[in-house]
Amino acid sequence: MSQGMSTVLARAELRLFWRLVIGVLLLLTGSQKLRDLSAFREGLRAYQVLPAWLETRKSLIGLLALTIALAECCLALLLLAGVWSMPVSCSAAGLLLLFSPISSVDAVILAAIVAVL
Image 1 (cartoon, one colour):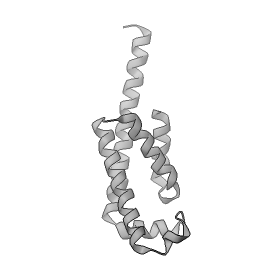
Image 2 (cartoon, rainbow, N blue to C red):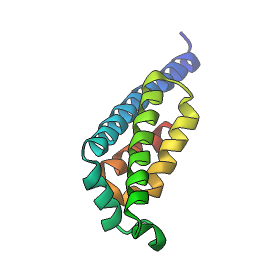
Image 3 (cartoon, rainbow, N blue to C red):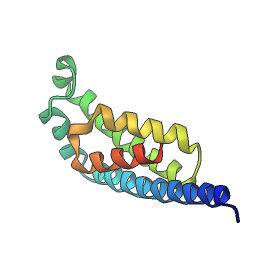
Image 4 (cartoon, rainbow, N blue to C red):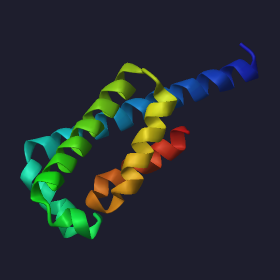
């Protein structure tokens, strides 16, 4: 096997590894948020990452919290399945950048996404 071919295989294996790691971490964090949605909703409010007009509307914050948690789970499942890996990785990175102060695990996931890209 040529050196170029082994480099391509090593990169593919590395991408697979990080895709699976990111997928598992996103699934864990998303499912944790779904399990305790009220705590996640309060976390959104406590970190003050939302616009002022949204912070006063509990029902919208609840909907946003549910949407973020479901988006993380959906992105995780797509990554684990290997479907649309590049767009899904970029979407996951964007989601994490928007709400990065919410979870310390998110910073680890973001670093892994950058490593894959």
